[in-house]
Image (cartoon, rainbow, N blue to C red):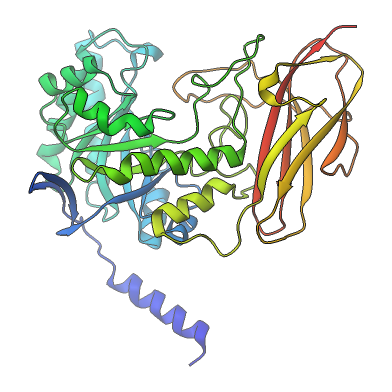
Length: 424
């Protein structure tokens, strides 16, 4: 039999035998340790936030996807089932910072009914792992009645769906919210936490705040823009892709990998690409779908094996002899050297792409959608290599110079330098 035919027949057989109803998921505690059981088997979450490349999650050794709402859930669940993945299915609970009033009982009741319909629609899909009730409802809020609403939603889920646990997702972890959830949300089974630079301290924070139940790290990633160095003109300094790879690995190994009693797993952020402060800050893929060194790290953390072909490693990027943290000022209309140092572990030939953007002014909080600044053409020579020149824009203001180094094998290294142009 031809090898490709055998593979096709195996895929058909797998699809034919795939479960069509819900898979029972539950949280169990034994010998002082919490475990997630799926279909009666222990299930530690090696997850990714965002389902843009589900087949790559699977190929890297991951097993789960996180969503923030049910928009597009049909496709996400279908992709998950096709790739043998599960889904932390988010329920988009309205946020006070967007104008929702938790003192309005009619609005709260209408939201509950809307979410009930969503739960009923998806609860029997075999890919569902557990429910994420809202995202960062504690961000910029003042009304603790939101936790009463979370409790009502969790109770509703338990009434209509006996097969999946409930969770709510916090921005960071502090005593006030833990106390509210312990007191007002007994129907919440799992505490989910979004954290960035603070990942390594999460196990200790969980214990310090007195959360004794299970938890999931529902978002973790690079140093956040609110945690990073800031220039005098208020531009946050982003880590390079290689710096990110190092902190992803070190923070994960210092925290989640060592908490064997309460942590049920994590969802790395973001398995895809988005504009948030910059086009490269949080996505571990580029806009054209190339993989950064962080993807290599995730494969190693999930599977214990590095990929056969590794991403380029960027050791330095300088503009006019200065790094991103050096508060770079340029004179309008003048030309300056730009130099990037990149090596490839597999000795692949590298090509370079530079992009000049004005500093983003469409700045939001909590990951809300931002618009990407339009690139400024014509100030970097065509076909630029590792050493090139930038002609500073003539208009005074804040900008960023980006570099992308490609290995021709779908891998990339990225970096950017914020700079300020002074007028003539």
